[in-house]
Image (cartoon, one colour):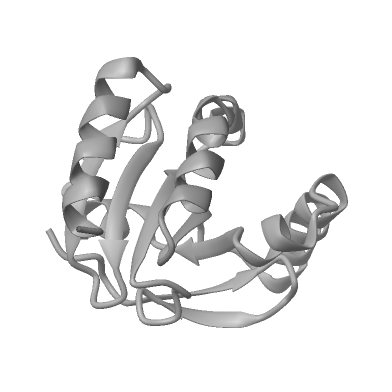
Length: 152
């Protein structure tokens, strides 16, 4: 699966084109479709931070994915997220995507929006790992194995 080219803005108000504007060679990406899914993302954050420290060349990103809206609505959502995320690095690595969610999911073969998706992708959009939902030890083991192979 190849990550499609999409445009978004991070919470520092920088416009980005993904996947080429990801900072690192490999990127651990959390795609969320609903506000309540932040709990699922948070369940992975201790591991994500550890992996980012352990593997030079790995960056962690959150991609809140929202159906395309008007300017006022986008501003309201983005400023609300900015207020809730004071950490500059977290703001830099939270990139909101306003797009046609169905088209985006279809391009990535994501069957539904019931859970978050966790991906490892490079700046060309190549996918190396995929799972969905809340953190669990089985997925952690597979993720660690794949990252170990990628960073040999």
